[in-house]
Amino acid sequence: MPKEVMFDEETALQKAKELFWRKGYNGTSMDELTKAMGLSRSSIYNTFGDKQSLFIQSLNHYKKSQHDKLMQSLVKYDSPLKKLQAIFRVSIDELIKDTDRKGCLIVNTTTELANLENNISVFAKGNLEDHEKFLQDLVKKGQQSGEINKSIPSLALARHLFNSLIGLKVMAQTTGDKKTLDDIAKVSLSVLQN
Amino acid sequence: MPKEVMFDEETALQKAKELFWRKGYNGTSMDELTKAMGLSRSSIYNTFGDKQSLFIQSLNHYKKSQHDKLMQSLVKYDSPLKKLQAIFRVSIDELIKDTDRKGCLIVNTTTELANLENNISVFAKGNLEDHEKFLQDLVKKGQQSGEINKSIPSLALARHLFNSLIGLKVMAQTTGDKKTLDDIAKVSLSVLQN
DNA sequence: GGTTATTTGGAATGTACGTTCCTTATATTC
DNA sequence: GAATATAAGGAACGTACATTCCAAATAACC
Image (tube, rainbow over all chains, first blue to last red; front, side):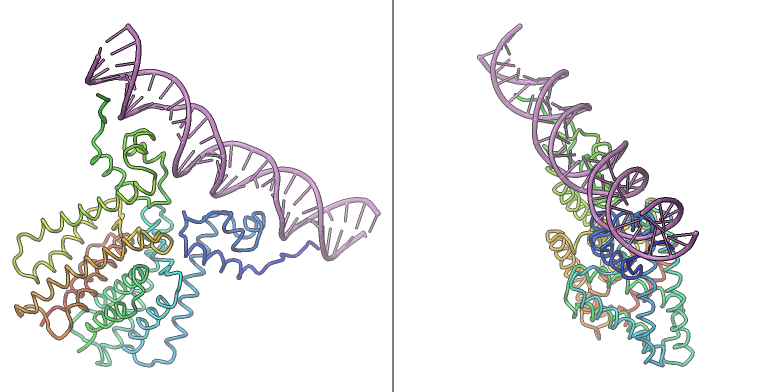
């Protein structure tokens, strides 16, 4: 029986994700990746494929872990409006807590590569659709229960909220001032009020 | 008397700006820059300095030309609220018209480099402060004349609007759908209504 | 112990990178 | 025409890049 793989794939991928998140795709070298992941070039190419393949896997890992973390933090809220408010609060807390000030890997990747790489553009669009749908479902429920303003279509509200979240993720790389981000969240969410 | 420079510095810088805008700082090579600018390496190094120096000059050129273009397009509006609405409309028109789907050079640079390069972070923060002040002045005037909602502080409204504009510049690299961006603008601006 | 198969370390490969250097071209002055 | 000064073309330099290759280490089977 052959020698077993001597590392944890999940941990290695997480290390790669964090490096790409800090430095971007073009700003990260394979040399840096070997150091961050604690693996040799052969192990990386064997397990993850080439640099772009590893990057795509890192993006998918990021999307899933952010999604899982968000869902986990929304469990305690039963009201759609409270869930939407929590989404902003949790996002801001995470952005502010991040000493690297690296924002969001998907937003960073969109601005770096979406206009150049079709597969990144497709990924970003898929991500947008997923979020729009998720936010729209919450808005609809809130409108049905009467706690969210019905005068604006749910899709428009969802798009606005998603757009605000994206803006926050860029703003967080410009200013570490929580008050600024909280102001933005408060005003953005105010459109939901009756 | 020595031989004169045989190219237009302004035109060359504009070419460099457009390439950095499409491909980012790390994604752009000096070789590509020589081709895009139509200059030799010596001419570029002589006139603009090294790659990072050229990039900073491109950023400044971009900031100034976008600012001038925006001011020009606001001249015809006398009302603060109409100016704010025009800012969104003009921004979206320009984003949608751009077949390269490259968004905004300052936003792209913020997400690529702001957490890694202090001078970029400083530039982004200065840009944020300039925009906040400009938008806040318009909001204040609108609140004074009664056409903008007074129940929300002007700074909070300004931050929200700036944040929305940033989000739009990222969204525009994800989707070419003008309706989506228009929805966002409409809802974002709705917080200004009395 | 030998064979086979796989993982891993890190050198090798060929190309790309940013920056400097060298040569040629050109303009002005003497 | 010669001397001087500068601009420009593009090669050279030293390093960096992504990817492949080779040797050593290790485990299981015979």
